[in-house]
Image 1: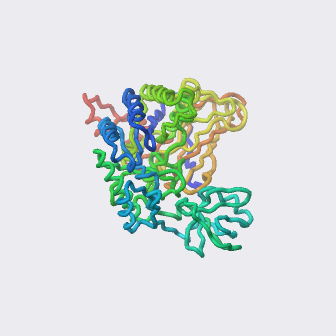
Image 2: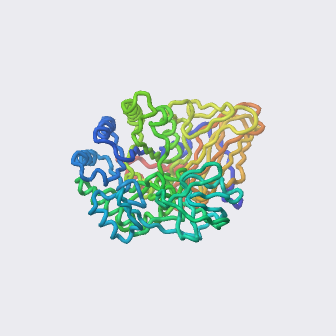
Image 3: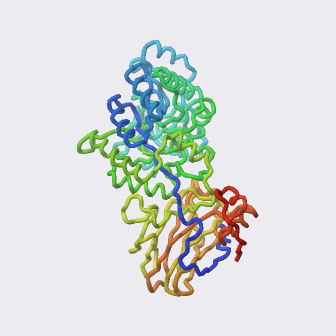
Length: 557
């Protein structure tokens, strides 16, 4: 067994005759969630709700509550959405995590007295909230630059490429963070942390500055409590239950880390999930995720029907399900780029939802997926590899597979062309069962052909997957054979890349029924597993069946 954790402990060669492999059928746990952010007019919400309800589906509405809390029409709308099963989400009171807009002079004065408030802007009626910084965070970058007024110039060599609009810079002499508002010809315009154009500093040359990583900046606990209380009060004023899912406002402010959110929103206000980017979009909303705060980092995918066609979305959904992922789609009902406008967007959703219903793809809300992803244990005996026979989107390529060099899929088999090199790959497969697994497949080819599988494991926080020694299977005789090897999946792995290559293939190779299943963990499970393969059913399972089947002596090879 090699040190990276994949071991070919034994390679067995069986005469299979094309029989089924246990666990070869893959149920493919996964699905999708539709989410729409920001406030729309009640008429727009009602039209979209009609499309979803007509197709038996529900969506999530991420709302900025402060501006709608006193609107009776909105209250009636939200009560209707909530009673129909749509989920209402907390998108912060005013689309700000470091500020809140007062609706009256009296409310602004009340905010001014809050310990979380740094200062207020009477003209805009905004109370700006304090922030906390971690100056020792490992991803912060030290550099040198000069400041004059609100300009940052004469920047250290190589650092300019890391500075862009929205970058946060800590000035030790002032003890404050300033943001970069724009970048032109080597000069950067500085604004306050809250994006106020009020910066006017004396000229200072060759200062030591700190480029702050977003994870090194966080709101105060008092600030999060204030926003959570205000959102809760707004929902109750609208006549609906307060939200239990928090959605990150995207814009000027740095994103909030999952651990920070969980401390207040999770523990004190009992939110069950959140959308924040600290764990990364690629590795969020996946099955068998061991991250302790994964439910508070349920990132959305940027692809929606506002930008992609129905056919493109079908492929994306099919591949996500094959990879044991939940596709979180977050749009804003923005139809400016669509010919036909909002009505065309409604038609796109109607067409996609009809296909989803036909294919029986699960559509759930964020809180429902949070429970299923992180509180429900999947069957460890399932095959985690996608089936070559499954093509939900009907594009001629199996879901989850990347076919190369002329590889074809036909009748549940992969037809691999002769020659040398990669023939197919499965990328970023999630839902893995850790530790001991059994990898199996059936193939038919010319003797002497080598079928090579390369495994690479993704770990959270690592840029590239860790490659392991390949598994090499040599075809010894013509006809269908079944090959297997034991594979040890590291506990820290969150996804797998699997690449298949051919060597010395003078003729085409047929491959079917690939499977990767967890080996039974205990002695009884191992014994029952061997006996089931031999055609025998354990007595405790026989007793549950109605009517009782006739017993026959076990035949164990």
